[in-house]
View 1 (cartoon, one colour):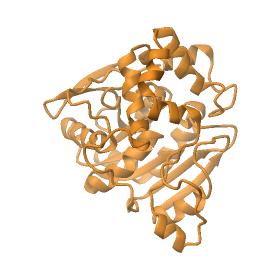
View 2: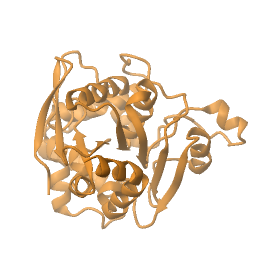
View 3: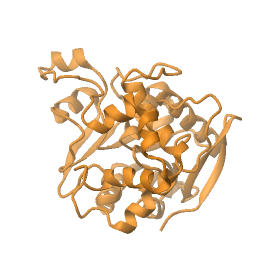
Length: 308
């Protein structure tokens, strides 16, 4: 089941498309990454709302059904500011944040840029902060290209040759097929994780060339081809409680993830390695993810229930 979209005005300049459920519960943001939209949370929104959360799953600016922005700024600092303004629009002072992929990188910035707005964090196959000195002091061996690493051909193509790639992907069918590959043969998930119907749903927004172009922006930033509006905060620990979950079949996180998490997240729970799952934990293992989020936030849910 997919929740209906609410278009919510952000800062007087654009609107975010937000999937909502569970109004009045514990505020919970679900933040998607690449190559996703808020639809990746379709198996989580309803169950988490039923557990007592007030759930908001936005499409990041320019993604899914959210508005494009006039200044063409699609970077982590802008995403973070949008999240704070979305919370203002929803009347939330503070929220739990569950995030995946680019959403996880955004949440690392958000938790430091607006620390008072973040109660606790759940990272699903997400990155760690760039704490090279601290990792070295802890005896963690540096790997080539530490920080946000370039791993595969698609990162090079999207980051260095975005317009040429879009010229090749010159029909809606080709654009959707390109995105569908990330839910298939690119080894991000077990072969059985996504059906043809799943891929049909999850690639729908990327029929639009403009949406795909926005999705390439983060890769251009990583590759030095696009400037950021404001420097990303990616070199600080996260002081809020953090739970980390990783698909055992994922290939996106690199080495030493457990040791890095212990340094980066002083109030760490996990990491938990989820068997028979890859990069898209919220879709592949929704019962596991939903149950873990409930347990991690059991005190918040109990307090909200007594106050209801």
